[in-house]
Length: 601
Ligand code: HEM
Image 1 (tube, rainbow, N blue to C red):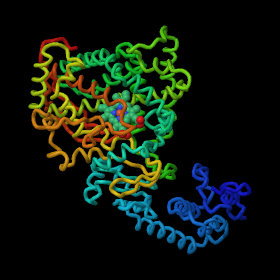
Image 2 (tube, protein in one colour; image 1 turned 45 degrees about the vertical axis):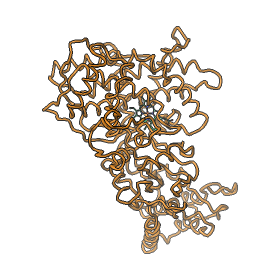
Image 3 (cartoon, helix red, strand yellow; image 1 turned 30 degrees about the vertical axis):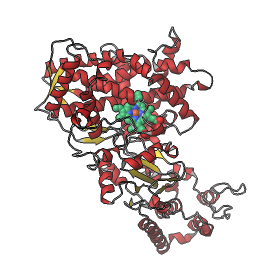
Image 4 (spheres, rainbow, N blue to C red; image 1 turned 90 degrees about the vertical axis):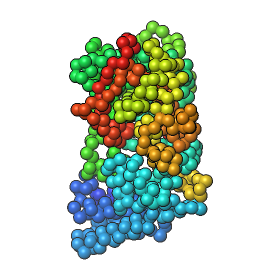
């Protein structure tokens, strides 16, 4: 900013906007255009078309090319004055300036290996430079990420450039690195200098910056993590909520049997989503919905969760090119977020209020998360808006991941009847005709191998969903240096599909995780970066144990009670779609044939 008191920020521009061409020289060589310049579309209309274009180029040059970072570049401050003169109406001058700026930006882009955000040899600050993908001028690799499946495109880009350890690229003006190798991935995820996350506009608008996942690394985030780990995700809490998992699964099995009887086949997704939503509502809010009685509130909740998923999962171009929001906002993200937030607040505050009015404030192992948050005192006490954000985030994370991972497992079991038979044999031998429990699941190695193999072939967060942000320059052991303020991604999909790490990576083969079959018992919870679908390091997924227990129990029960067969009308299609998580593009349909006469529980 123009930081002198005598010359308040943006004074030259303000003068220009009011038609006064007089210009004061700036007191500081560093100039950042004030945000209101961009937040007011009227600026475009108060000028002529040619001036507006010039203005955009001017700011593009100022912001993107770092033209004002040196004392010698004082001259850019004369441009607004120049704008006020009649010279600009001269087409020749305007044309020359436009060409000059276009050339300058092309020049900067042409020499930046990772695209425009890596200008000034940002990628060469370490002993070894970071190889990169240049992408397009201005946009960088945005098109690569918006078209098709980003994890697959990035994986092949990294291989073709010999950049699997680390590849630099630009998303608009954001510098990004992606690691497609377990060693570099470990260094990034475990480093305390990568414990922040870049926050998307939609996440900020939906209050997630106050919740665990997007809170900046600091005291507030540590407090939230500690509360969640010692209450919601503590082993004894997870065990105490088993009854709820069983209840929700039993309801799901019954509705599957009903649909099968009615239609001769089942579309599994809606059953899984309903069970997952009710389950997380049970552990977080202590509230379960009965679709026959609570249809209004349940429908509102479902609609809100769906809308939130869409908004968070949508690729928002303006996150990387803020000026674009005035021209191109196909998802109307800001408008939709501001409509959703009051609905979320109303629902969650209502539930908090019900708890406040409830009879007992004593905590037990079976208490829900709202009880836990309300019981906090002193420095730990949370503001009500923080509580709303944390609770809302849990609903989000808990519903989506559990349901879609179970769907992937079941799809692979339908496609691999021999694997399904082995799993059923294991279940029949260990559990026989009784109801499967968490304790049984812990003793079923083949079931665990099946879930791990599904996590390997279909990691729900192939780019680990939420990226990290470097808070200082980070020197990696391979000699590369990741500069501060760089967004870092780990391409877990590329790692789990690397034939050097996993022979025949596209093959669904649970035996690779069975020690008895010559495989390796890999820990998927973040200690082995060859398969870390829950991330690693201090921001590793805190819900990993809850997620694994739930998915394993539900798969066991689905397979114990039914034989799952291809539905000829809807063959299994493993095509992926990458939203907030990586889902099956076409929901799984299958024929569910009852296996044993035991009650569906
Ligand atoms: C199959 C299930 C799940 C998968 C594959 C999964 C995956 C992930 C991944 C990849 C991350 C980012 C980790 C990193 O940056 O290193 C994450 C973060 C997170 N997950 Fe999960 N997750 C699952 C289940 C859950 C559940 C059930 C919950 C809660 C109910 C949950 C809550 C969170 C939260 C709050 C974070 C943010 C942590 C932080 O930034 O400190 N997840 N998850």
